[in-house]
Length: 511
Image (cartoon, rainbow, N blue to C red; front, side, top):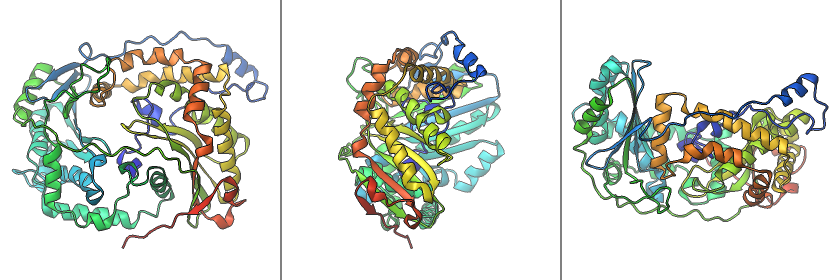
């Protein structure tokens, strides 16, 4: 469930290119490292030397304008006249992590109903027609730790579309009829929640690792069906307001951040002074309030080692292996990223893919990632899909590679390839104005250092073999692995209790 709410936002650094399971296709261990003689072409490639990437990383105050409205809303602006488009992104400090068990689902319902329910002056159908007439897209949602509203529109229509965005956020109708429709859509989704094995694996894996914490909480129809418009309205009233409080984390790097409750990023074909004046007019009347939401509970870092099997009649087994890890504020994020690239994040160049797919032919996809872009503890996860008859062997090989990395074994060539891949992919995180302004705004929203991106490449290039060995030993815990398998045990090549204590997780249908 948590991965769905995060929309697979699985990251080490705030760059999606690092987060996707199969995004990395850089150079990995050389053929010589793998015990195979390199070809002449391979030898030539390995001798190529390229100059270090020198690229001016965008900065707030230089490449992106930052302003603060009188009511505390922080605005980021970046003009880009290449195309007649304007993109707007609004962040609100809310999320399902703040829900109590008896209200789980109210955040997601609120996020969907903001857009689907119309405004106090426009019913949903009228709002839809107005947006469609401009070919504009306006969406709202609330995930685990943030609420998001986005608007994409032609620049010639921005003066008509921006008031609609403001109306949705400041004066939502929260139509009870649309609420019932959304609730039934969730109900139907819950009825089918056991159909897709990947969804089942992700959901049950999080439930095992996080227990009752919101990070692992599953939507419950018995709770959801009791939700009323008053619950949604109360959630909206609690969180959807600007705040003037300066409550940032007390560190030298972030001491200048305000940690605002509402932020707006605008990029595209506009004039900044005119856009800022428009935003002041539309959002300046949004009354600031002190946000009084209770802090979410802390994740209990209790290992749950063992093998958990979800029985389904499948030809393939879907496997997740891992444990709790660190969070976005860890000083080890960069060396962890480099280490994980070598282990399983480098796609076809990683150790896991090389061993399980290339050498053994047991899986089409296999790898690892650290999902630690959260305020509390994230996860280290290894994953693979393999035919049922090779389940034990494939899982054992994955665990073996994790153990080998945890021992601190790494070569200079592996490290050099990983550093180069991360450095070369960095620029693609700022491919256009909308990416740039959104990333810089997200740094402030997450209360991360202002100079994160300015120092990132230097930090990557500074990673040494001993750094990789240290974080591997510290952040990989092969003796504490939770192994979850969705598949048909009757077809497994060997009983999985050889890998640890075995427990079966029953699938509960929703009526």
